[in-house]
Image (cartoon, rainbow, N blue to C red; front, side, top):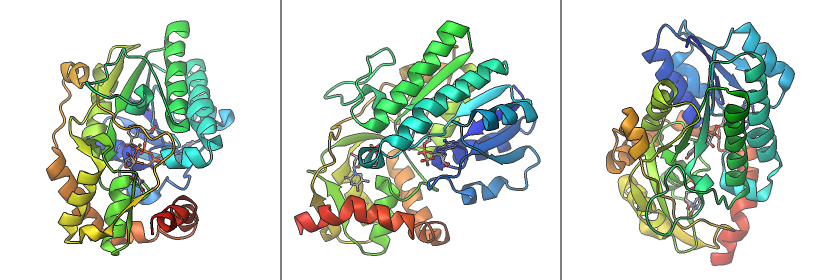
Length: 340
Ligand code: NAD
Ligand code: TYD
């Protein structure tokens, strides 16, 4: 392993992975390949900008010619695919881009990787492929029951990776991370959205009763988990990267408000997300056996995260303009009016 192409490396988790790999492995060349969609942000990579073992290449994983050129020009031997459309609410409003990137893009990347003789391919997937789980923990061999267009598109990308491993003998590993939070997360997801809205003393639109449960994983733990699976995972296997920090949305929201010294009256219970999964929870045993352990518990991780958004308004204020405001209006205007 020497020349690693990290697709989607300008996004939230991908950039944490790039920052981690550039620092931890000075002998590897890390190439970030990213389309820079609304969620891609070159500011996320400022900490590694001057590193000698880091390069950035703008491109779309669904564009075969550009992918092929990047694999050849950088003599890539390893691909880690973070590139995705990643927000469930946007997938409900408009699934097209999810099929383009999460399904077709994943396929093109696999297919070009095979032609270029890639030695290892890591497909970054999600706990959402298992769908809603009432009780217990999802295990890697459980069946897929994705419920949102996002989850279905990720399941399709992951199944194509499996097929390329079985059919063509490609060396492929898969990670399934749980809900991730931390610095540099686009402020449409629960934690950064609510933290930045609360800082501005604006209403927090909590879907339905707010009793839905997610298992929260700090972003640096997710990045280290992908590193561990990339190096030690068995080809053809998937590994859950579970935070083992299950929390109800209402509790996460209340804690964010407490950390910011804001009143609970900012919470607005708005009409629920369509097809909203009540609970995700996975077992982390299999990844643990590879040597991965999460280091952050939720209380410490959430506090560090909320402080980061307090201290880094330069990063998120410029995002919360233009397209972001159009999306906000589309997603929340009617919902907030309905409960008012
Ligand atoms: P993100 O939305 O913050 O970043 C996605 C990145 O992919 C952006 O930089 C974007 O520009 C890039 N991208 C999108 N389409 C592209 C394309 N066609 N070609 C090249 N680049 C493209 O997402 P994230 O939260 O960092 O998630 C990263 C990966 O981890 C995704 O595959 C996601 O499914 C998975 N995941 C996320 C979570 C989570 O809680 N955020 C949990 C588990 C798994
Ligand atoms: P999100 O961060 O979008 O992640 P995911 O849908 O992938 O789990 O949402 C986390 C939880 O928070 C989910 O149950 C939906 C809920 N949520 C709200 O209640 N209100 C919101 O405005 C958002 C964005 C999410």
